Image (tube, rainbow, N blue to C red):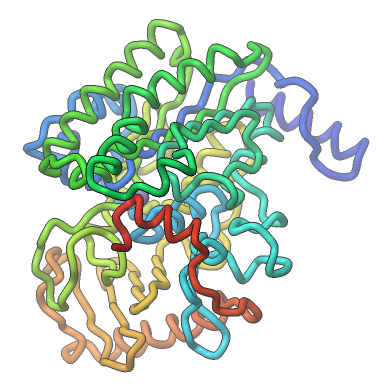
Length: 426
Ligand SMILES: [Zn+2]
């Protein structure tokens, strides 16, 4: 019914205007769609995936839905993977001439190649966002965000009717970067204040349309700042997230709704791989602990829960769940492959084979994820044909995803401040 009504509307709109325009009112009552991103949550710390860390509330999401077993982050870091989710595009740091782009608030969405000019947003204005498309499908759009890297300006907010940045620091607070100040800031942006902000934003919405709600939590990311073990941070978050679920259920927001929970990337917790890598999730080669993310849905998000789904694929899948007549085509890269264009490496995966090519000219490494999920054994020498294939595809993507004209710039003072706040720079 929902789909037929939408198609009828689209047909009428296109007859009138020549293209599909936003409906004046939803074709009929549709359920709300919630997307919850738990920043830095590893898949193997969610009990629905067999973890010893108990996450009963996260697991509630999939109790009558799906646990997707092969979901991957499009990039091992927040700004890139969120941009991928918000646009369906492949984030890239490639720059014409083979050099990588310098990292700045201008380039850290990975979409510099699509920018109209130097003053365009990090998510270029011409690139349609998930929230904009949700609006066209008749949704009222609400975003509640606790990761400062996504705060304005940047373009992440585009398309949201209401965009709540939880507890942004005052200029006075920004000047203090001592541990206690960082802890205080992390607490102000933790799950309980985020839950309160979500409920407040929802209560203030008119009831005329279904809601698309994007919630981005930062608690797990801040485990070190808050002096918690990673597992403890996950457990504490899970309990707080349960409070939001209770409130949403009580108030009817989850009736006929779809709730999707995922993470923007994982975290390295000291695993040893074939190549040296640091802890955390910034500047590493993209080993699996960084890329494997949980993806749970209340309801049916995909036909096959074992399908390979990247952050950027969620863009289309969510629009489809919202009533888009068909799944938008994958742009830039194929659905079954993953290309991570990083600062020091290019990582490419197709099926079980994953390669990591350093930008400094060292030779490429190849891993067989089915035989060696820990990526401890570089088998490049034993599989020259696969290595050649990966080189060829990386060369091709490097060209196709390059930004031609972005001048390398250093970090602005405010970019640097936001990165320091999150522990990325000293
Ligand atoms: Zn993140």
